[in-house]
Amino acid sequence: MEIYIDGQFVPETEAKVSVFDHGFLYGDGVFEGIRSYNGKIFRLMDHIDRLYDSAKTIDMAVPVSKEEFADIIIETVRRNGLQDGYIRPIVTRGTGTMGLDPRKCPNPTIICIAIEWGAMYGDLYEKGLTAVTVAVRRNSPDALPPNVKSLNYLNNILAKIEANYKGGDEAIFFDAQGRISEGSGDNIFIVKNGTIYTPYTLTNLKGITRQVLIEIVETLGVPLREVELGFYDLYTADEIIVTGTAAEIAPIVTVDGRSIGSGRPGPITKQIMAAFKTITEQEGTPVY
Ligand code: PLP
Image: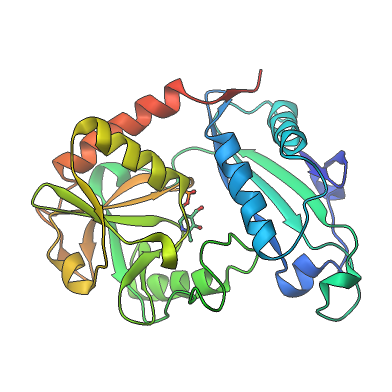
């Protein structure tokens, strides 16, 4: 495996950051998760735009242009000979001193990892996932906006730990007011009486797969509304869908032990999953 770090491609064993890198010391940095399908990188520029927006929010200047970053990502995929891959670009604050002040870190560290990777949830796309709501609340937008894809994922990891103990495949977060926010690594949609509902993105990541789903349902003619949702809406949903680059488009068939709809992936979910497969086969930035 070849990994890009600080201007060079090196073998995995040589891809190292300093213990004084603030990405390591403080989670000070940003990242993306991108997929390639059949040698084409899916929604590459959308991910790069979001990476730069995350960096802007934490007042970090990415030291290369967006076009140069795209070339780094494409080259990482090419060197590793990937077809169906998962790509992880990372920009850390860089090496500094022992102390929070980012002004002590003059040069952000750029890293890009890319691995071959298939379906994250295996046969659960057919059967459906179980989800549990978690006590830990999603980071508040006035503290650490969930829109920033930052290297500090402890909030999400706490949710994942809770889901593991409760036996759920995925965790569903509420915000501090009890409104549904998102999953630990995906956005959430509820289908009720033929309409799809999803939370506003104030309290969750502006998901790129979320955007793809919005485009799909427009073409399918299924109405979609952004609204505030609570746990009542989860338990009484006809279908629940989660979306993410890693998770792709996945059906949730139980929440906190309650069966959702028929307890099987529903018809609208299946239609959206099929359309997503077609789009990922057709679109993308060619690597080779
Ligand atoms: N929400 C969180 C917390 C995530 O980590 C992710 C994954 O990137 C998503 C949502 C889905 O975003 P996307 O579809 O852009 O991958």
